[in-house]
Image 1 (cartoon, one colour):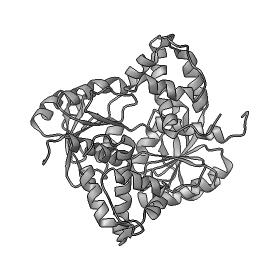
Image 2: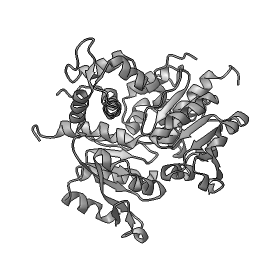
Image 3: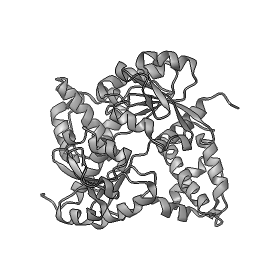
Image 4: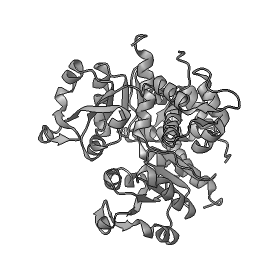
Length: 212
Length: 212
């Protein structure tokens, strides 16, 4: 499989997979790119182009086989496997992440949780017990871990990212409000509601009467 | 100002603004596109191209004036104003959002919080008291609100989005794991850590030895 698939395409595939899973749950067996596009507010042309990176799906005018396309997308994205995740940082946000029920059913298992606060070490959270951050590197060395979630304050985040990367973690979900540096070959996704809102206010301003 | 600026460009501007604010805090007065790119792991060419949509900044070989560019980006994005936000849904995630300290310093004020659970109505959360969802529409009619945050379960989310849109809200930050439908002229940003992780596992798989 080629590596030159644009990242924006990869980012859309999980959205397609989720919509197909919903369609499958609703008993649908075939869906057109038009109908899938209507569900997701994207154009059918974009769906066809995105999928074309991965081969031929469906036949012209026949639509996609829902189960078949879903299975293929799950395989492409690795959604047919379990992924081992560590969480670093158990402030208010980290707690919400640790206790969020939506990860495990999707194959993402938080196998360990770390915090730098010695007071909280040993306390149960989600299905795990809080470990001290000093033990992060040793844990990563001796346990296969795929993904690191960073939920520490901005000033501490780069150091945590560096330790995750040094231990061989290739995928980092960053909740800290900063842009982490990672070497080539490490993927980062930033979850930042402030940046998301800041990109929307641009559009609100655009729609206002001039001069406001 | 033209409306044809690609959305990906708009989405990057808040990242630039945040980096410039950090540089200003650190006492830097000038930054080159190269140095800014290094900070953010993007190419200097991309920064120059993104900014070119909004006019000419800096002079060839002289770098950008940090304060000047920051002020202009803040104006473009509307970061120099206060924005009024309502939050709908006060489950565990909604609570974390309501109590998150990072919105207000950035100009986003959660002015009201709503939930459908009558038991929780009247309880204090963040700086507000929980109101019943039945009062959402009346509140929006009589209070200027710019942005709606949706933190209800997936099955309830579209209905909440519809009510926000009907009341004139043009910007929605959606935490529900679904793709909401909105009419043209309404901007949505989805915050979904599962989708973010699903887009990263693709890359982990790519880097594995074949056949694993």
